[in-house]
Image (cartoon, rainbow, N blue to C red):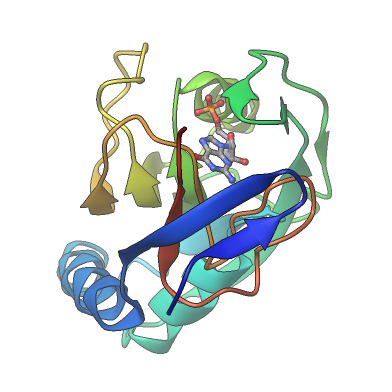
Length: 179
Ligand code: 5GP
């Protein structure tokens, strides 16, 4: 794949679809082992997690359920730190083993907020599975237990991740070309 222009920014190939697939395989093996017999409830955080949720769930072989919520918190190429309301949580969480599915964990603001909201519903346990994790940007103590790939603090798109609405459909992960 060559470089791609999205609005005002140019992106270059960074992680291939195949490499992502292999990393998701590993996450799925861990979750299948940990949650066997526990019927976990996966909660995908929209919009970005649709790709990861789909790819991960294809590989989950144990009994499970999935639902989606929406949290809007990000505009442009740096995290604003502003987190809005959680929309669409209709399932009964009480006593359930919950696995939150995120496209990417950057500063951790979004996931910390979400964990706070979920804790109010008294789940039996909550863990986080993320397609991408930026350890250098992460500011929280909460463990991100299931991570497909750790990446540097670059702005990336593809596989569900966008730049102002564009790029979610691109296969693999592309990173911003800085000039
Ligand atoms: P956090 O709250 O952890 O700082 O950011 C989480 C959200 O910010 C993600 O769900 C995602 O929507 C957005 N985000 C963080 N880093 C990136 C990135 O490199 N690329 C894109 N497209 N979105 C990002």
